[in-house]
Picture 1 (cartoon, rainbow, N blue to C red):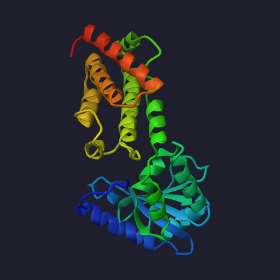
Picture 2: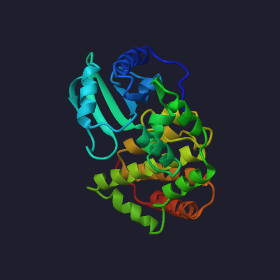
Picture 3: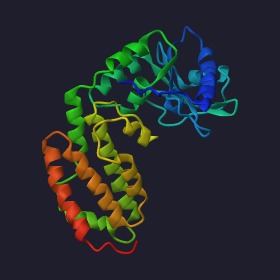
Picture 4: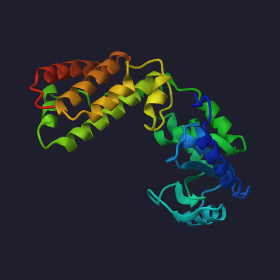
Length: 289
């Protein structure tokens, strides 16, 4: 289901007014949908939040044309980010000293992005479409969001199995190589990947389209199926200076997550491997804190 905040804070209301001014300045004959996304759309913006908007046009526009339209809408100091090829155009600028990010999609690309979600692709599109708020609309966003109220069980199962893919198939004691002195980068890389995978499993278990990782605690808190203190334990694992304790904290969270997941080849292997990994970490010399 689309995410909705119970109330909009003052900063979100202020930024939404600015976003509406940008939306209103784009010619009607060009745009089919203007969608407010990110923290402003959820009513939780703060003083460091920017404005994020998805602009759906009737046909694909050149980046230069997007720059022209952004400038005419009052944005200054224009720039772009990300790949310049592909179907999306990205324009960054300031309006009233407020940073604004505009992502431009053609309607064709928007329709393809919705279809891709049901194939397990384009996860970033879920945040823009399922959680967006229309600033100008022809009714397309409502149709897309209605379609996205269904999170197919087979898609959830596939995402859960894919997320558990890396947990097993080799010696659990291999985790200890990440706890050696001088291996902090390898440790962090592995832990961030593992955290991303447990988060993916929890959203799929709850049949919810996965948003970005920002403000994880408040988003996860509303989901009924999850290990206890889920976001808190992620934070603890990622900030724990002792590598053994960090790995143990995260491994226990992984084990509890796969324990509530439906059976499947990868999940069943992960349960066995994570149990062995926990035993290895518990019995290993933890070293100094």
